[in-house]
Image (cartoon, rainbow, N blue to C red; front, side, top):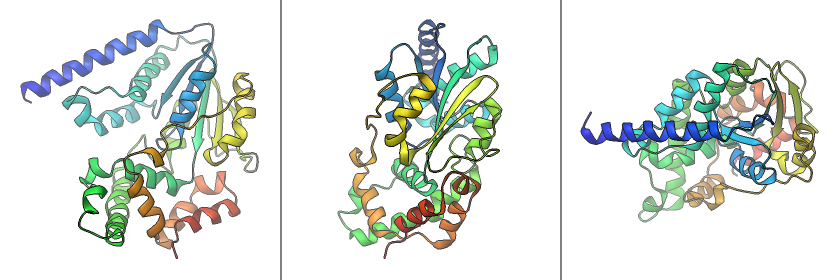
Length: 299
């Protein structure tokens, strides 16, 4: 490792320690922690910011992993930024800090957990576009200078199906596993199996009682409709509203995302795998799944 890389590691380590200390000092022992805890790309940033704004009495955290393996996977996934630039990602800091609290077992309060589920194909596509340039050095803006939108759409389809989806499946990325996250993260940490009891698909949310936590699970597609009632049931906050944040249409990859949605048709075999999964059939009814499929079958 060169001197620059070593210095970046030291900077990252110092920043991490400092931010962990600040979180510990700001801890509110009079109220339980509220943790937005879910796989990435399911609309959690908007919920996190809205909760922080709604009631300052709660400590509100946002993370994608609380298992040791999940946290290690996130560090590995972000390694180039963590150690090359000394970048500190807030959700990773929250994961590390909350894992320490779980390890010490000094909390006598019931944690309040909020987790989300989303159309699994939409989540995969959103994750693909967030990582498109970082993983494949593919800039839609540059490609469109010399290629038609149809050609770019064809290349995006190939990247998504034959590189990104294959990578996701073969590498079994722990913290970002679309179909298995509830088993490999939530179940491991809080000893609750959300698949062991029927989910209220029409209502769109459910509260589970774990040994040391109350867990609210919400379908992203219904979050605006149900969040006022669901958040009041969990936290007692009235008139809660989710304010949009981190929306794909406002990001740099907006044009790429639009081209994909409008021009790319995904193969039935892939859609069958995703929509016949345990996750899809447990949280969504057949009408919802049919609508999801139609979005990815471009005529």
